[in-house]
Amino acid sequence: MQKKVVVVLLLIAIVLSIFSISVAISDSGTEEVNEVVGGETQQSAEIGITIAPPATGSE
Amino acid sequence: MNEKILNILGIIAIIVIVINLGILLLKADEVKAVLTGKVSQGEVNITVGEYTSLNFTTWQINFGTGSVDAGETNASLMTDGTIDRGNWTAVEDGLRIENTGNINLSILIKADETASSFLGGTNPKYAWNFSDDDADDGSCIPPESTDLSTEWYDVNATMGVCDYFQPNDAIDEMDIDFWLIVPSDSLTEARGDQITATVNAV
Image 1 (cartoon, rainbow over the protein chains, first blue to last red):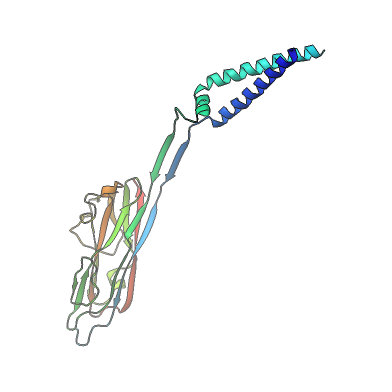
Image 2 (cartoon, chains in turn brown, purple):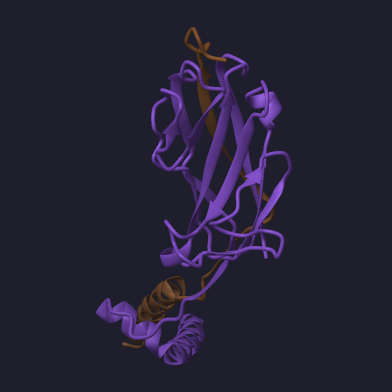
C-alpha cells in the first residue's frame, strides 16, 4: 500500500515537472524590434537629349 | 530498508510537487494560456528607428532626337512640354523625388555637367527649377538661398534644395524641372547628364 502511494506521488511529481517546463517554454516575453537605418543616402537620375545637326539654312 | 527508501522517495516526490505547484501558482496567467490555448495578456514593445530613404519616382528624362529649326539661333526645351524652335519630343514632366523614409531630410542636388559641357555652342542654357506645387504642396522647406517654383538656377553647382523634406505620405514629393537652350552651333549626337540627390536625416 505504501509503495503504491509513493509511485503515485512520483508520477504526480513527474507530470507537474513536465507541465512546469512547458509553461516556462511558452512564457511570453518582451520582444524589441529596433531598426535604425540612417546616415547619408544618394539616388541618381538621368537627363538625355540627342542633338542632330541643324537643318540646312540655320545660322 | 525498503520501507526507508520508499519514505525518502515519497518525501522527495512531495517536495517536488510542492515546488512545482508554487511555480505554477506564480505563473497562473501562462498556465491558463497553455491550458486554454488563449493568451489573456501580452506585451510587445516595438521601437521604430529613424529610416532615411529617398527615391526618384521619375528618374529619367529624354527629349529624344531633334535639331534646331532652320534659320534659328537656338531652340528652347522645357520639361513642361514646351519645345520652341526645334523638333524634339515634348517632355511633360520633370524628375520627381519622394521621401520614402520616416524622417525629415535635407537635400542636396548636383549634376555632373554644365551648360557648356552638356550642350556646348554659343550661349547655351541648362537650368533647373525645384517645386512642390505640382507634387505635394509644402513638402519642402527650402534654405533662404533657394526659391521654390519660380526661380530657374543655372546647373553649375550643387544646390541645397530642401532644409526639411517631409516624410508625411501626403506631402513627401517634389519636382525638378529642366530648361535647355540648345544653340544652333551646339555639340551634336547623344548628350546626357546624371543628377544626384544626396540626403541626410535632420
